Amino acid sequence: MALVKAADPQTSSSNASRYCRYHVFLSFRGPDTHKTFTDHLYTALVSAGFRTFRDDDEVERGDGIKPELQKAIKHSRTSVIVFSKDYASSRWCLDELVMILGRKRKTSDDHIVLPVFYDVDPSHVRKQTGSLAKAFARHQQTQPLQKVKAWREALAEVADLAGMVLQIQAHG
Image (tube, rainbow, N blue to C red):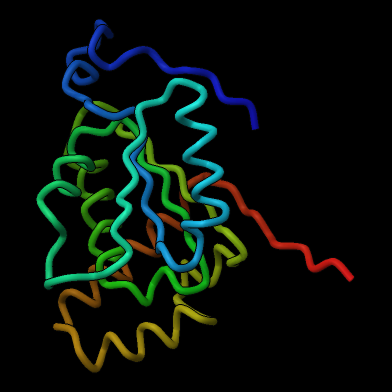
């Protein structure tokens, strides 16, 4: 994949772009991909000149998304969501996803959302099957029904967007 540097959000003539602090917001589940794929993606984006937000906290604390993450999503031009086998087990990741899609729907600046399906089938994300079914069985026991419904709808919506499917190949 070739990376081409986008126009600087601070100097772009587009009104919406002027208020974007980051070119890219990365959403991912830390234990799954932080030290592998997401780290390589982050390094490539930064090396290509993209201002990229990556939350390095791997520990979930509290019930809500940190204010810094909310601001980073709001002030990003593009969101790249790295779906992994255990992405849906994280309430934070699912809350980020809902917020990202809400931003895409509610703003007029053409916020770009790019899903990356890292060793997970997009149909499993769309239908919440496979490893996602196990995560949602747990969520239904501990989370409000309305929240679980919003997560399910967000996963179905994002799985229908154009994205990338990356399968890990076993060698041997």
